[in-house]
Length: 513
Image (cartoon, rainbow, N blue to C red; front, top):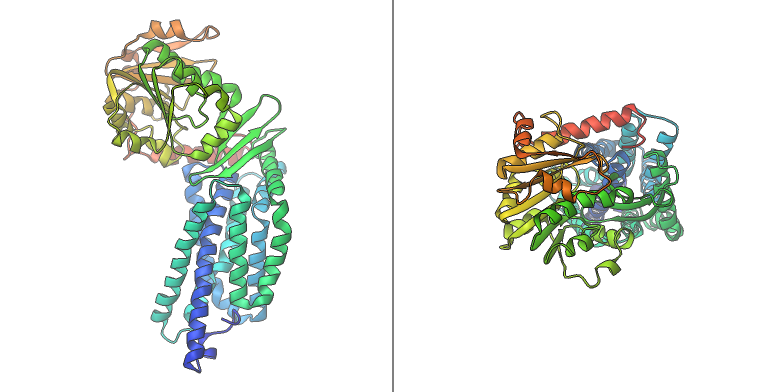
């Protein structure tokens, strides 16, 4: 493939020349497939974080990326007709990747700062997706057109691109868990090689030289762009991103917004902030532990490890299961330094919570489920009846599970708190619900037979809580009688809730969440 406009028909006069063209075409497409994989994963993280990471946003972003690839297929024959201009456009598309990750973050921040609401951020996301994905996806149909037999061309060309795509996915997985500059270096290197194979050494140099100049300053430019995103999109006046790492599961960021105001964000959604963390931990874990006096405790989630120190003094045996090592690293560094756990009897297992429950034979007196609200399918499963059935199977006869209800109180039957509580009641019928004003959240404690009652909870609640509401099991059942338990067949709640939040943000200019 001496140039992007050259076809097999122009080089297939000799068998040796045809073979050489096919080998070069396959190599180009394999590298293009790898670049498509890295670019797609980079784009997903950038666009999802900029638009807030609910499931509905993830679906919209992925649909946009596939549409961008289709746009590249549509452009391919038109670029060929333009000859040298088409080749220049291809190189320009490769050069646009050098704006990652700064351009998307700055663009979302600029829209928010200038109060562009409504569909503007979504239109921006579509434009970025097309600009990044379309040029690379023009190579496949152009290669197929070079074969006399289109079926053979499609089989060989698509096969080469698919192999490269799988390779790109594997390489990207190795880059996760490190700074953004590692993944960007992989993406830029692949793009330079694709340009070189498709158009020759000059194109490789045009992409590689500015990439080499930009790469050393990338971490600082990316951090500054992220800070601008949190200032303008999230409304944090003094936002300073002190940690930003893409894990295999999500983008993990720690943001400081002035003294004592530190937050953990996952894919652009606030997971917790340091001001609320102590009260969240108090009601989610410390209060039920004081009331139940567990000999063995399991914590699912709590990547910050902030529950380890308080629970280790209230339980003889403590185990934490957290799937994302990057969240653990951020938690240890910024929210709960390891010095406080140095002499504690405690075990950490890096695993998926539901998988761990399904495999383990251990039983626990207290299981604390410290996971995000059900805004994605993965998170929502950890609030379902099926998950609570797994939890029940690992509780001792008087064991207790504690969860936060993703809301301030039990309300309408179709909302998250009522549906999560109904799922609990379906599997563990003895349920107390605590509505805390100072924590600004509702919590549920469930069991086959709770070892404590409402007055016991009031007795161990924080003294500053003067208006604590504790709903007994009978009241809870009455309040959730019309609520459908959240289960794996009714996770439409996730999309509905995400769509509501998306519409609310678009109408309010996008600031805050």
